[in-house]
Amino acid sequence: MTRGLLGLVASGCGGVETWFRTELAEPAAQRGWRLAITLTPTVVPWFEEADELDKLQALTDLEVRWHPRMPSQPKPYPTPDAFIFAPASANSVAKLALGIGDNQALTALNEGIGVEGCKVVVMPQASADKRRHPMWDTHVETLTKAGVVVVTDVAPGALLDLLESS
Image 1 (cartoon, rainbow, N blue to C red):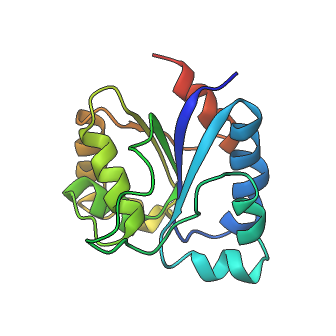
Image 2: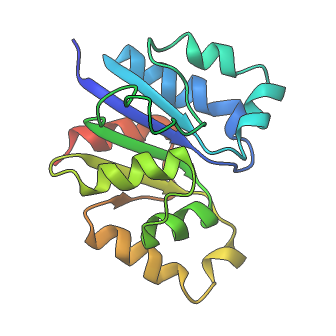
C-alpha cells in the first residue's frame, strides 16, 4: 500500500547515524511511504563516516538531499504529504520555530509547516542544559501552535504511528 511522500529529516545529534536508517527510514519504506530524505549539512559527514548514505539512497528513488538547488533547477519533488524530523537538534528546533531556512532541510520543513494538511512531527534531541535555555519552551510552543507535533522520549519507529493518528 502506498501512503504518499514522507519527508524524513535528520540533524546532527549523537547516535543518529546508528539508528536513522534501521529504526525510521526502513520501517517507513516497509509501511509503503515513498521517502524524500533530507539531511542538515552538519550530519552528512556522520552518515558518510558510518557508510550510511548509500544505504539511505537505496531506500528511495529520490535523491538524498542536503545541498540547495540552484534557482534555475526545478524542485526535485513535490512537498511531502508528511514530515518526520528526527532527531532535531536544539539549534534546528530554534531555527524552525523562527522560520529560518538556512539549509535545505529547514527550508523543506518550513514549507511543509505552511502547507495545509501536511503533518509535521518533530522529535527534539537536546540535553537538559539546552532545554533550560529561556527560549526553549517558547520555541516548542510556537511549533505546537503551528500544528507541529513535538514529541520526546519516543522510539523512532513510534513516530510513524503519529502520522496515522489525527
